[in-house]
Length: 165
Image 1 (cartoon, rainbow, N blue to C red):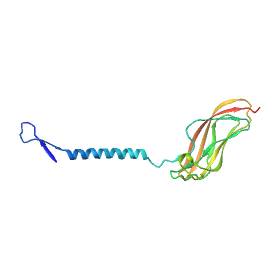
Image 2: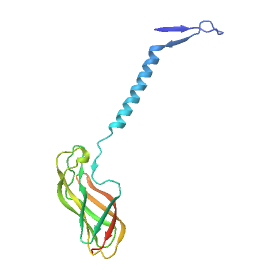
Image 3: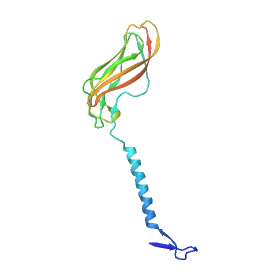
Image 4: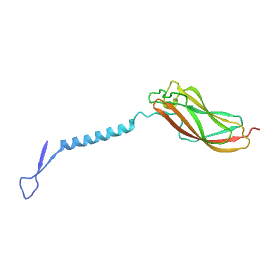
């Protein structure tokens, strides 16, 4: 539907044409493009899930105690393990007499809506030879040997150590 609107000008045959259908089509296209972009941002790519978070954990140990800190695994978006071997842990900073180890185990990554166990391990912290009370931050580096190459993460843990009675 075309409308021609004529204004008084120096040239009597000039006019402005307004095409409403074309303007509405442009509005629809821009809204559709914006919706597509928003959907793309929400869905995102196939990010990989890991078990250790960026939060700082607090634990208390007496001399000779051990605690299981959490599950360690590396999975893809289909809940399949990407590990070639059990992850390794290294203490970068921490109190003397405290050790960290990852024991190989099948773990269930429930936080990522996975129902089946995958290859991984359990992170265990052990305190030995504690003579005095101390409160220290421990920094761990966890190394993953994956199908996509080697990956590393760090974990911060605040530890309160108590001597045995």
